[in-house]
Image 1 (cartoon, rainbow, N blue to C red):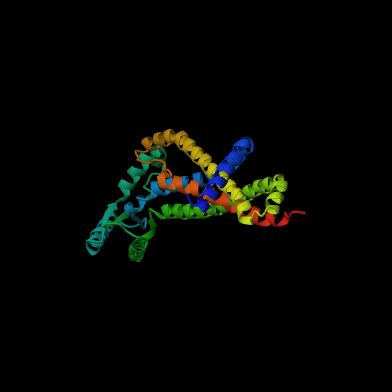
Image 2: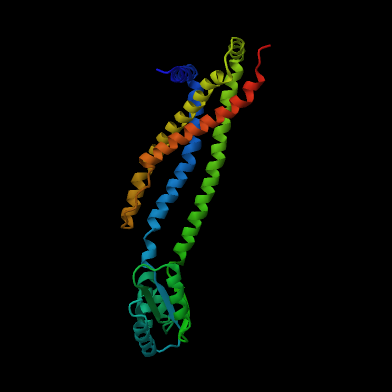
Length: 304
């Protein structure tokens, strides 16, 4: 084995020994790192689950054009036929006359007796336009402008405007979580760096003796870097255990909720690539914290 690799192996084994001898402190540090990694990861997976649940809703995009209340049913039917011919191949036009609108509202609201007291139908006729194929926002906007210009139309409502608002909120949430993750990542670096700083001070005499007999800074630095890397990696393992526990705890309620709504919704999991990413991220943050601490504090230790 090349001497360079042998030295790295010795430093790795020595760091493992130090972690084992201080296993209580190591466990506490790993828990702190694991929680710091698991919190934003759980939030990101939750947002990904919501995005998956709403991903196909845009395929059912529709426009509802409410006609003026004084539009006769015959004129509404003529308008629907005329608009259907104009938009043939682009959108399907369906007329909901005033009587049908009232029946649907009574069925969905349960206010049939109250509506009967009004004496007349307060609901307007409506045209429901379903674009052919998958409609993007530009297509819906063009259809909306075309229908809104008709003199018989009082108002036009896009049925999926609330979905776009939800997607905008999800994007805001995603960016907020990434900012939160960055702050927690900085906290992991600081926690690891503080642990390595204490380890350096506790081994100050050993470091001074090593420098006296000719030990280089690279030789002294190596075990501490491995120490930080292993601490971060152990925190990543804790984070994966926490994510697995959250997934197991929420899988049942999510399946029950999906069954009630007839959906195939399921929780998004990190998977193999995501799990390796969490482990490598934890190791990288631990290494970064150790590197910062070693670079700063080794300079202050010189044999007297």
